Length: 395
Image (cartoon, rainbow, N blue to C red; front, top):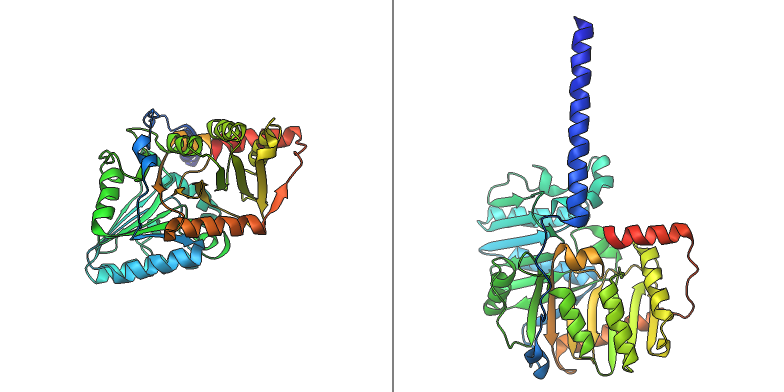
């Protein structure tokens, strides 16, 4: 009898293990390939009207540089919330920063503020180390946000891979960009976020990002989105670079997308100066970045291409062309981010003397000044090339 029970128990464990393997394989397939799919790339994401005039004074637009500045704005907005808070994030760790956001949200909920949190479940893959140590994301625990009054937490496996990050407070304050909720984004890594104030501007963002309403035409500020209607961001970057006449400055963490590489080479062939800033020691994707660097350095127009290694980890996802066209958002320059992940990027046609574009110009010059120029191509081993392919399509 005991032998039969043991055999039954063993079969159950094997079935459970098999089911777990299937779930993990399906999740991995969804994470890498997103078989449910996003929409096609449009012929134009910005359009000719975007480049004809600037947005003007850009009142209500602010650039946030690095985590201390960005999270100070996030904390201030949450603490001042009166009606609602909406958060979308990819990673949320159980560390000092993660707990600080949780505590402020719980305090806001105690005041009667309605809090909605959307956490991409597949982003939890980057939290596994903490989970093994017994520190799961606060979105999963009752000590965090789960089940707390006035707080709704959504973690769904088979939604679009949502890599975007933003905070919407009282429908009048929007903070968005590339920073997840974790200590490295707050205290360690170099990065950028955008801040937009004003109920009308935030309503446009909500309509486009949350409800899929088409963006109004003929505006010199565009929220481009990768979603089931279309993948707009790469096309927007191509348009911005193709319109450049003098200079393109691109600072990104992970760069392996063929279309953007070819677009930069096309700009260099027109005599446009291309400045590319990458982290010297990225947390991942390093081999893929080096393959991209070699491609650019092999160009016959190499004299117009300048590649820099930023001395610390830069998680930036920003573009500036001719000192006036700016892009700030969540999308990496990788095939997955360009084609299979939900992302949000702001494109702005500003002026050189407006605060938003002026600060981005100044900060990019500062980043280049702190960096070391890469002049020689890398000798890559077979292992490096394998890692580059894996990094290119997984990250």
